[in-house]
Image (cartoon, rainbow, N blue to C red):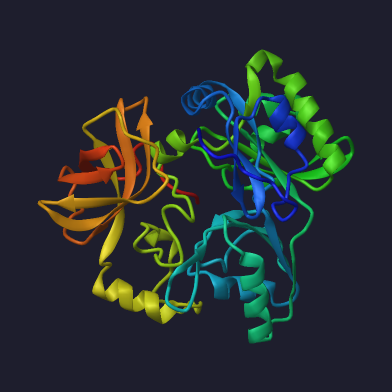
Length: 374
């Protein structure tokens, strides 16, 4: 029997915990010092439901770091190698954040609310403190805070149909990685066509706890004929779709080029950002390791809670960072950070799992879909 998770006050709860528990949540993890559901029925049952129907996700742990003021755009550009200079209002941009060595600090979605106000919808690391330190040290004229905003995600192929019933036909006009202010009970809510799945959907940035409760009730009522239910980011689906997880597949020890995020890095031009020289050198020399996919010859692999060593012909060449059994491919699949010279598709490697060695073949990423972010 696995140990239970104690939940003291320093692990912040979510205003939608009542919803998770009414929907039968079976497990939580801690993300940005908050609770995040990880399983409702079972990981595989949740996977099929997500791919076939529609789910409501409590992703209040996707904290927003608000940067506002005359130097807001300049500070955010200093934090990322992604060129944000031509970002349009209410555009969402996937933007790796780097330190002075080019290491990954986080990989948020940057939302441009207006020219002097941005939200960074962050992954699991303390970007608020990082941004405050950079602003203070660099003398940027900004204010930085974590606003009271708790996102809800609506994900799955029936998400358009569900949101149309609650918000009206206009919600279908929101383009991918764009936002729009829409009214619910005469209250404006920011809705983005985004979310941490490849099944399509929306994220709703709720800034009123009581209204969030009312919104969940409205979504559940409107979605009865659509087989709506509570859900959460799904480990199987996100690996199939090539969605990397900060803290699992990439950390401060990795850089965006190793993580296959080259297209989000403007290196070698006139863009100035923290880690520019380090990333330029890495690009010129070529990365020494890179994240690739693995497909196992077996359809039985254990849960991956620790990194699994990977070898080829007896030589250590890297490690598996995330793994799952894919119902789509009927085999185990994984992300692995492998050394240069061992990335060729089809190469056979040996993975040391807790249940013994498993053979796997190197695969391109993503396994399905179009990869990470926009």
